[in-house]
Each structure stands twice: as C-alpha cells, then as structure tokens.
Image (cartoon, rainbow, N blue to C red):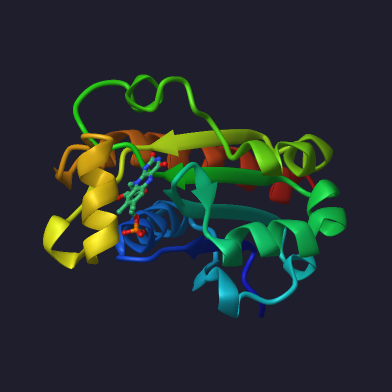
Length: 174
Ligand SMILES: Cc1cc2nc3c(=O)[nH]c(=O)nc-3n(C[C@H](O)[C@H](O)[C@H](O)COP(=O)(O)O)c2cc1C
C-alpha cells in the first residue's frame, strides 16, 4: 500500500532533513503512513493524500530541488492539502523577527498563492560554522548570523501534530 502523506525536504547540511524526520515521525505516531524523502527523490505527489514540503533557506531562497518540485507539481498540489516549511533563522527569539519579517521566498510566492497551502511555517535552523566553505563563512559573518543549533523541536512537534489531526480527519471523511 502506498503511503498517505509525503514529507519531502531539501537540505544542504542536514538540519532540514532532521526537521523533516521529526515531522514525519509525529505524523506516524498519530497513525498515518508517511514517506520522508529528499525532494529530489520524491515521486509525483498525486499518489498521496497530503504533501508537506520544506527547504533550508540560503540567501532568502529555497534550495533549487525544492523550488523545482513546487514548480513542476503546482497543478497537482493545488488540488490537495499542502503544507510548506522553511528552516533558516538562527539565534534566539521569534524566527520571523530574526530575518526581519522574511516569510517565504518572494520568487515562489505566486506559485504558493495558486497552490494555497494550509500553512507556511518558518522554523529556526542550525548553523555549524566548521561545515561551511570559505565564502559561506564570510557570508554568515557578514550578516552576523548566530552559529549553533536553534531548532525548536517543541514548535516543530506542535505544528506536525496539528497537521496530523487535520489529515486524519480528512482521510477518514473521504
Ligand atoms: C551561506 C548561508 C546563507 C544563509 N542564508 C539564510 C537566509 O537567507 N535566511 C535564513 O533564514 N537562513 C539562512 N541561512 C541559515 C540556514 O538556512 C540554516 O543554517 C539551515 O537550518 C540550514 O539547513 P540545512 O542544514 O538543512 O542545509 C544561511 C546559511 C548559510 C551558510
């Protein structure tokens, strides 16, 4: 039997992959069958009942494989329950405030407007300076981004649990 929910993600250094794993685990604990897959390996979303798609944010953009998936599958996703999430801001405090109100990549907003996701979440990310290349280190230094793991597992779990409740209800009602 194919899974009910797709959790697809794009990551560079692994922080977003672990967020996706957590989201998928919460959905599984709620009794849903879930595929948790790097987005470049995800198949067409139309075999699922719901799709959750997330990406790490680099210089205000989603990773190319995540934005590509959104563009390629816009039509199918517009007809199903979809949730989007980003992993980015580091530092203490509200993630949106840390990135001056940034919410979602501007270039993708028209596609999101057509898909009409149930929610677009912005989660804190994790930044390990010693994993970064020279230019990335310079960029991070330049914007004074805080190094460390700021992922808020409580917020991620609460978001996922609320989605699990909605998906379960909609699957049952069908
Ligand atoms: C070069 C560079 C640029 C970044 N730009 C942004 C940004 O524009 N907005 C943001 O919120 N986070 C930004 N980040 C932080 C990453 O999105 C964050 O570390 C994320 O959790 C990394 O996820 P990953 O490990 O899955 O790749 C940047 C990090 C680096 C190294």
